[in-house]
Amino acid sequence: MVGVSFLSTFPSLLPLACDSSPTITRCSSRAVSITCNKIEIDVSGEDRFHRRHILRCFGTTIGLGLIESSSSLVGVANAADLIQRRQRSEFLSNIKGTLYTVIKGNPDIIPSVLTLALNDAMTYDKATKTGGPNGSIRFSPEISRPENKGLSAALNLLEEAKKEIDSYSKGGPISFADLIQSAAQSAVKATFLASAIRKCGGNEEKGNLLYNAYGSNGQWGLFDKQFGRADAQDPDPEGRVPLWEKASVKEMKDRFSAVGFGPRQMATEALLATDPDVAPWVQKYQRSRETVSQTDYEVDLITTLTKLSTLGQSINYEAYTYPAQKIDITKLKL
Image 1: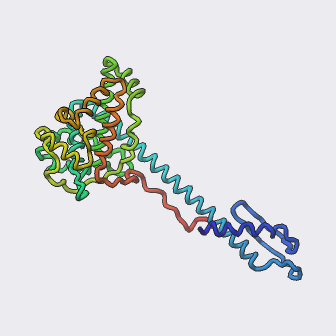
Image 2: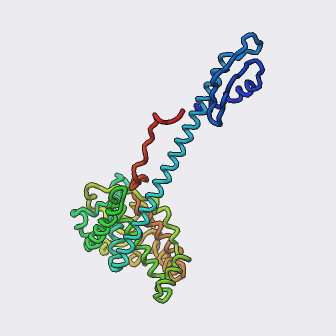
Image 3: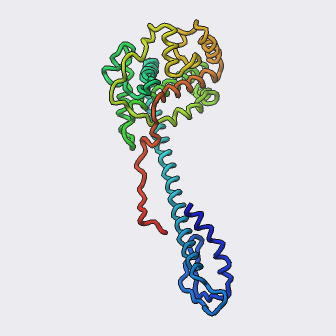
């Protein structure tokens, strides 16, 4: 508002430039500031250069100077934002490379990595807004629960990957919450790519081309933005995650429904294939998996994982960025 009010005085200076009464010895101007060094005024003239004209000139000078400096501040802010985005993007890209290498070298661990991410997220409670994908599953009392039996190997593998990731991170160590969900993403991508390679008779080069050409890799955009989860400092409460292999269809449906998921988003298809609500989706996804692109299956799975990975979490969009350069306002030119 200050800039607008000062700018509104600018037209009033235009008649002064053509006024014949004042004799102006020297008046230098620039695009963003006006400096009047010496003004000789003929007080006998009828059209005198009144004090308010000088004040207007002075006010405009300050106003334009403030606009110039504020514009530079906006430019610095935008530049800083772009720098932070680039830092996060580069870090995330490196993380994906590390996790993909780890998972590719240990393909048998994929089901456990996915279950680890699922169980860490399914502790979310809508009523109390607690739990969720916050890395609490790393704590011994939680990872040792019956529903998490057999997941320690996957957690240990990710802990080793975390050491490598932290070694090249310039913006602080990665949270377990981000690590576990990012690992699940890498595991899902690995299964998609493996499927494409199988469809190409085991030819990896052709499989990669097929996946890049027809796969749903571009659907991960929202997932990648949700990067900056905070770690819990204690285990989440017990009793929130079913023992999946022993749970009834109703128990599974109820638990998924409790965190906001419907039949379309339930993952354990084998046990739910006979359920009338879930069966149509199981059949649809099976048909999709038989196609070249698997679009329906992949897109819905990516969407579900994205939602699952952010249940109740407050994302810090400045996480893993370097401290922004501070601006010394005392050195700003006004």
